[in-house]
Image 1 (tube, one colour):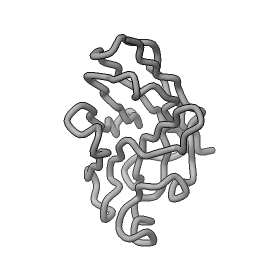
Image 2 (cartoon, one colour):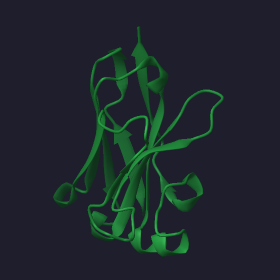
Image 3 (cartoon, helix red, strand yellow):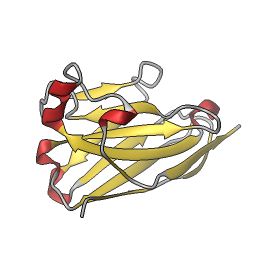
Length: 133
């Protein structure tokens, strides 16, 4: 019943922008944390950003240090959609991007935050985001 579908991936030149969307079905976003992760070829899947993922606080956000100030996560709960705005993209940002969902209250089981792949139970199929020089 739970389903997540990413869209908005594509090809951009270095310095360009891309906005990814994650549409959720089978649940509402009110009580859930949504994370954005990326995985480059041969690399471990890593967190990019998440919303409502700290201390079970609705609207709380996290950004990877290397991306802070360039990426922005936002939520449109009425349409069960979470966005990731990616500005000033760099070649090293090329990866498959995934969105994931977990009940926000489960952050209490993991030190008060949901930042790791194994802490999320539901995943979308991913969308490719490529940056060229």
